[in-house]
Amino acid sequence: MGDGVLITIEGIDGCGKSTQAALLCEALVARGLPVGPAGAPGTVLREPGGTPAGEAVRDILLHGPDSLAPWTETMLYAAARAELVARVLRPGLAAGRVLVLDRYIDSSLAYQGYARGLGIDAVLAVNAPAVGDAMPALTVVLAVAPATGLGRATGVRDRIEREGIALQRRVADGFAELARRFPQRIRLVDGERPVAAVAADVTALVAPLVEGRGV
Ligand SMILES: Nc1ncnc2c1ncn2[C@@H]1O[C@H](COP(=O)(O)OP(=O)(O)OP(=O)(O)O)[C@@H](O)[C@H]1O
Ligand SMILES: [Mg+2]
Image 1 (spheres, rainbow, N blue to C red):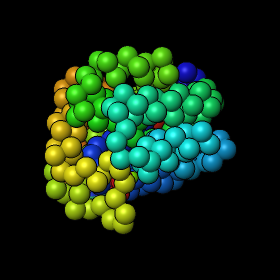
Image 2 (cartoon, protein in one colour; image 1 turned 30 degrees about the vertical axis):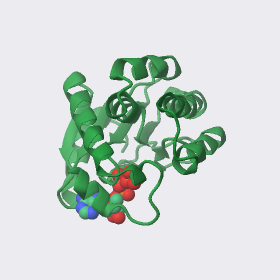
Image 3 (cartoon, protein in one colour; image 1 turned 180 degrees about the vertical axis):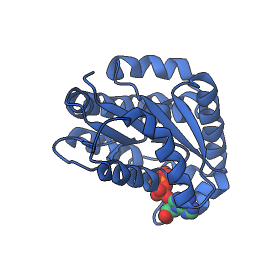
Image 4 (cartoon, rainbow, N blue to C red; image 1 turned 90 degrees about the horizontal axis):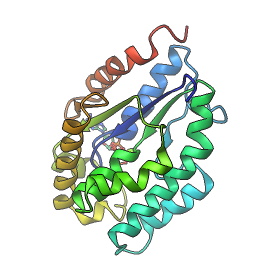
C-alpha cells in the first residue's frame, strides 16, 4: 500500500469527529506532512462520500427514504466505500500521503453490524472485498455519552440522528465492542473533555505513525 498512512476518526453522532479530524489534519500539515489526497491537499475525507458517486449515495443514506432495510443501508455504505478506496485511498496511500477519514469501516460495523443486529462479522464480510488491505493504521474512537452527542448536534437532523438515543446507545456499545476486538488498531479517547484536550490526545496517538517524516 505504499508508505502512506490511513487514520480514521470514529464514534457516535455528535461525538466530535469532524472537529477532531480537521484539527488533526491541521496539526499534520503544520508538521510538513503530505496530508489528504494529492488533488485536495490538507483536507479530511468524509464517509459516506469523497467521490462523485459516493456523494450521491450519501444523499440517499442521509436524506433519502426513512425506512431503508438494514442490508440496503449496509450495502450502500459499502458501495460508497468501495469507490473511495479505489479512487482515492489506494492512490493516496501508494503516493505516501497521510489520509484522515471522518468515519470508515468501523461505522458500518458499529451501526449496521452491532446496533442494527446484522452481526459484526457479516458486515465485515461485505466490506472486506471493497477495503482489502486499505485498513487504518490507527482508528480513534471518540467516546461520549449518547446524550452528549445528541445534545451537541446542531441544525437539521439527518435520517440516522432522527432515530434518537436508543440507537446511539447501541452504537456506543458497538464501538466499545470493536475496541475490545481490535485493541491494536482501535483506541478510545474520552471525548467529553474540551476540544483542545481531546485534540492533544489524538495528536499523541498519531505521532508514532508519522515519526521521522515531514519537516
Ligand atoms: N469536545 C467538545 N466539547 C464541546 N463541544 C464540542 C466538542 N467537540 C465538538 N463539539 C461541538 O459539538 C458539535 C458536534 O461536533 P462535530 O460536528 O465535530 O461532531 P461529529 O462527530 O462530526 O458529528 P456528526 O456525527 O453529526 O457528523 C459541534 O458544534 C462542535 O463544535
Ligand atoms: Mg461530522
